Amino acid sequence: MRALFQRRAKHHLIDGMDLLAHFDILTPIMAAPPPTLEPSGRDRREYYRITVTLPICLQPETETIEGELVKQSVNLSAGGIGLTLNSLFQPEAILSCTLLFPDQVLFKSFIEVLRVDPVAYPLNTYRLHGRFIRLTRDDREQLVRYILQFQREHLSKHYSA
Image (cartoon, rainbow, N blue to C red; front, top):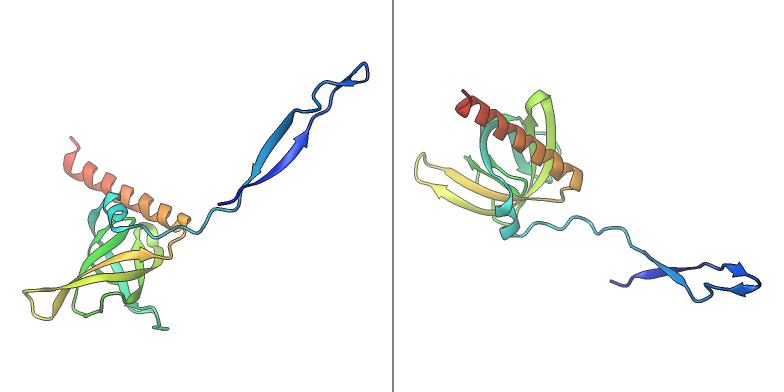
């Protein structure tokens, strides 16, 4: 990355003599930060994960009509999601994901399907592993806040005296 510099010279005159004629302050002018890069597999595993039951809707990103939210168990982190489905999606497919958080807060994002594993029972059931894509920094922070909230609730329910 090439940094641009703005030059500011300070001049101080005493008895007609410029004492700081060669003193410069260089101030870097930085470009805007690049869009958030998608987390790598290793980075996704560094996010805290929690399994929680939430209303969710997954559908192909090209679907124009919003599908129905269905309450189910999801393994959720700021990097991705895992859940069991009766629908088969192909790896690398892009899905629209809508989650309903507490206080009726809708969270919408896109997921890239990483892999889909068949589940032995019941028939025609699959475990989908996906990563969040195209998340803004604010969306990822919102997701982290809710995950931490779920963790606090879980700990207070199961470990408080």
